[in-house]
Amino acid sequence: MRAAISEVLETMYFTDVVFQQKGLEEPFPGWETVIEVRSADESATVRLKVIFGETYARELTGNMLGLDPEGLQEEDVRDAMQELANMVAGSCVVLLGPEKWRLGLPRADRALVVPPVANSSVAMWASGTFAGWASCQRV
Amino acid sequence: MAYNVMIIDDSKSMRHVIKKVLKISGLEIGEIIEAGNGQEALDQLQDHWVDIILSDMHMPVMDGMEFLRRLGTHADFHDVPVVLVTTERNEERLAQAMALGARAYLSKPFQPEEFRSLVLKLLGVENGWELAQSDEGCDF
Image (cartoon, rainbow over all chains, first blue to last red; front, side, top):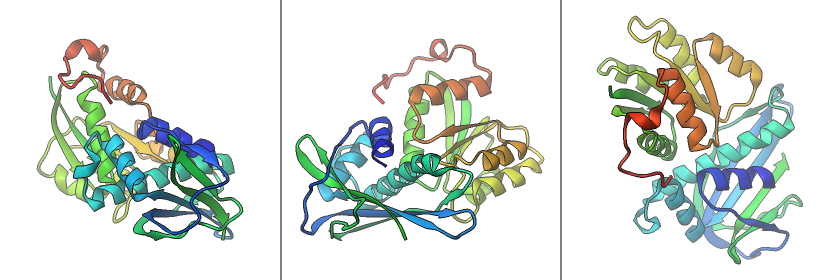
C-alpha cells in the first residue's frame, strides 16, 4: 500500500509523503476516501481507506489540476480524492493478483475524520507536517 | 492537421489532467469532447467527429467495455482508435477490451511522456514535438 500511495502521489500529484506508525490520533477535519476491492468469487473484500487532512487534500488537488488550492470547489477535492484512492487500489490489486480481484467505485466524504484503528494503519507526513492516514483491511 | 479528441472518464480531475497532457504534447489539438461515461460519449458522438478516443473502463451508467461493444457497431466511429486509460490490471479483462476493439491501454497512474508517445503512435504522428509548439510549456 505504501509503495502504491507513493507512486500515485509522485506521478499524478507531484509530491510524496513519509510513512510513520505515529500520527494525529484525535479526530481532525479532512477527507476520508474508501474503496473496496472484492475477490472475483465474491468471498472476500478488502477495504482501502485513504484519509487526508483538509489542507493537504486541497494541496494535492491543486497539484493534480495545476490550480490554486484556495480557488477549488469541494467537488473538485472530492473528485481528486476519489481518483487518488482508485489509482492506489488499482496498484494494490497488482500485488494481490489482478485476475482474482475487482475494484469497486471509490467514495470520498468530507468530515471530522476519526483516525483508523486497524493494525495496518499507517500515518503519512509531508514536509514534517501530519498529512493523513491510510489503512487496508480485510472486512 | 488538428485532431479532435474525446475523453471519457467519470472523474472530472482525470479529464482535466488528460487535457493538460494533450495540450503540452506538441500535437495540434482541435476540439476536446468530454464525457462522464460511455452513454454520454455515444450521445456526444452524434454531434461531433473525433480522431481518437481516450476512455476509462470503470464508470457508472455505461462502462468502457459496453462502450466498446456499442462503438464496434457504430456506422461512423467503429474504426476510430480507442485507448483505455484505466486502473484495470486484470489481463483477461484487458484482453477482452482489446478484442472488442480497443487499440491500446495505459495504466493509471501514468507518466505524461508515456501517454504522449502512445497517442502519437496511434494517430500515426512520427515526431509530435516538431509538429506544433506548445505555448504552455512542459510544466505538467
